[in-house]
Length: 213
Image (cartoon, rainbow, N blue to C red; front, top):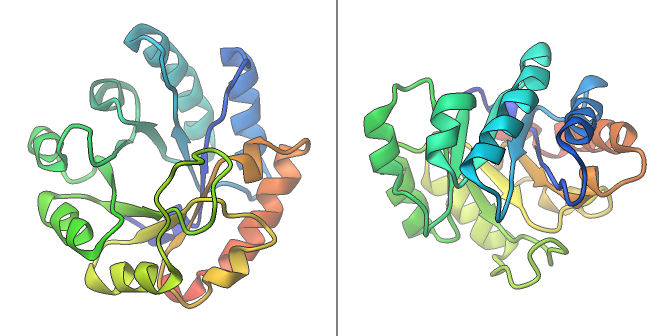
């Protein structure tokens, strides 16, 4: 996939928002030169609810030419999105890749070089690696060092997205690591002005990760 699509990877944080509210939030994140890819992440919802939500969010993403990724749920992703992101405990990357062509995006979580190489061999399109900083979204997330992130980026030919506690204040600390971009949750969707937050982070990411292209 085009590495530039991963420059600012915004992961939704719906909380109590309705589907229509979420679509509005996603559009704010994308519209003004902001997020380059969206991940719809939901926990403890039915497949039926997730499918309904994905169909609506996909309409927004499609208007702007931005890919939609579904977290964890390969079945819904295959029907209503451009890709899926799979954690270490989810459906194996190889199983999903066997069912789809090369255009379907499969992201995989990798916290070690060994996991990164295995995911690439299994057919992953990109890797998500972190947490690079303490994460307010996943307080128990295992941290990886800057050096560890660099090693992962150097070990594979597919693009890597840094994730975990990334903000406008610390994103510059990731410069030179070789990643294609940054994945954020609260740094975009937790802000009062989502559009401005996304636009500002996009500018910082363009500068920080220019070597990752």
